[in-house]
Every structure is written in C-alpha cells, then in structure tokens.
Length: 152
Image 1 (spheres, rainbow, N blue to C red):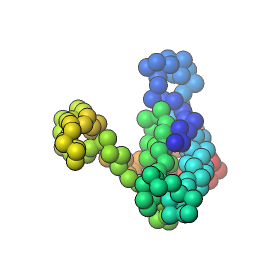
Image 2 (tube, rainbow, N blue to C red; image 1 turned 60 degrees about the horizontal axis):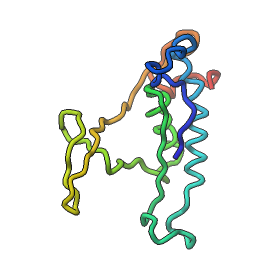
Image 3 (tube, rainbow, N blue to C red; image 1 turned 90 degrees about the horizontal axis):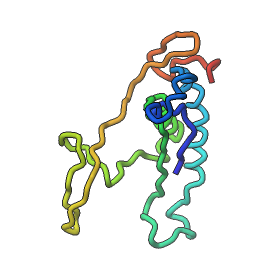
C-alpha cells in the first residue's frame, strides 16, 4: 500500500484550517514526490514467479494500492498515468474486485459471487484521462507533460 503524502484537499470539510494554506499549486509540488514513492513501492513488490513466492499468493502478479486523500487528478490519475508510462508495460492497472463499473445508479450494488453469496460492491467511475494544470504564477497548461521542468 502506498498511502502517499498529498495536499489533503479531499479532507477540507473536516479540516477547515486547510483552506487557509491550500492553493491549486499544492498538487504540482506533491505530484513528483508521490510518483517517486509509487515507483519505489512497485520496485519493492515481490516477484510472484520467484522461488521465494508463497503458494497462497496470486499467481502471475503482485499488487500495490495507491492512495491519497486528494481529489485532484494531478495527485491521483496523473501520478498513476506517469508511472505506468515510465514502467513501459512492466506493470498494469487492474480493477479491485469490490468495485464495479456497470451502469447502476452510483450506489453500492448487490452482486452474486461465483460462490452464490451476495456481495456489496462499490460503483466506480473511470478516472480522468486529461486534465489542465495551473502553475504558481497562474499559467495554465493543457497537460501535465506540458508543464516546464522548472516547476518540479
């Protein structure tokens, strides 16, 4: 699990003091640290095909969960997307089995599992694939890749 430091904008209701120091630019500063932590977490995953893998581990791959309390795509989707590109196909994004992307009303839904037991599942929405980025000086860029390296 990589529960990385973030701007905390997803906790503003319970942390009203965050409004005093929050700016849209916090995400840019966090993005690079988050990507480094995520990459390091991936490096530490056990190779399930190695001779040291435990028999109960899922065959063929290990898992890492990336987590923030931010709602900003620069800290979420953009971090995951940039690391996936850097890994050049060595890792892949997979859906968690407790989430469903069917066209329900957005509420948790009952789904009958292969064992015949009803399971609660959360409705998931696909993440953003494009996002605009604003820098400290107020300049907007159409993608994170377009942001000059001087902001790293």
